[in-house]
Amino acid sequence: MAGYNSPMTQDHRSQLDQLGYCHLHGFLDSARVRELNRRVEELFAEEGDGAGSEFRQEEGARRLANVAGKGALFRECIAMPEILEFVEHVLGPDCKLSSLNVRSANPRNGICQPLHADVGAVADAAGYWVCNTVWMLDDFTAENGAIRVVPGSHIWRKLPQDVMLNPADAHPEERLITGHAGDVVVMNAHAWHSGTANRTANARRAMHGFYCRRDKPQQQYQKRLLRPEVQQGLSPRLRHLLALDDPLNDELSAAGSGSSGFLK
Image 1 (tube, rainbow, N blue to C red):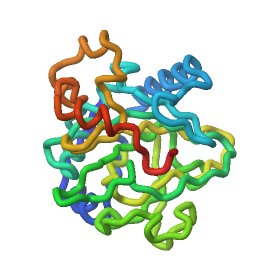
Image 2 (image 1 turned 60 degrees about the vertical axis):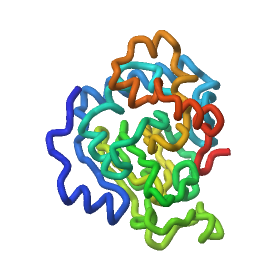
Image 3 (image 1 turned 180 degrees about the horizontal axis):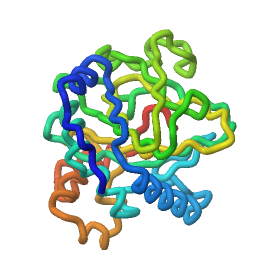
């Protein structure tokens, strides 16, 4: 797999610490983006109206869930050392994959997600515990549903609904993150963010690799979702990242997985 040639810099660290996100331009080459999109569209065709049903479905968007169990090329992305270095800066070294999903904003749907923190998470006494990576599979533009984020909101220890009358409204400090297919945005997922409305004639696709601290439940309990034959073929490194041999994760996730920041 094509990797990211630039190491994590002090500027990246400062952006994650102060803004709550950093933008990695050109992380994947065009050949790998095409390969991911080909497999994503195959899965949408195979799963039909049931796509995303292992977790949540969303008005105005197509979703795939449990993507870690649907192809080695997806698992290669979540385990890339260049990505995990950024995730561990937010969460510390004791982290795991929480979920891996795809979201495709439908053409001309006009729906803007409400601002939210992922899984409704507020930083606790031990610090930050959620981090998301957004892999752009299409260009993100101001018209096709790019991410909006409120810089610095990860440090407020509040959720949008605690402050805003309607979290779907624009926030005076929000920024729009646009970019090109192959870019990755690493986000402290306590930061308030959302997808915006897609007003174009084409879908806008992204993959979301979501991580959490190991003392928290997975959003999607990987041990339950991944087929036995998939689990048996995984390396020790991937088994650790997916928390497949972790009794604490079994206890936490069997009872507490499935939450979302805004989907009901």
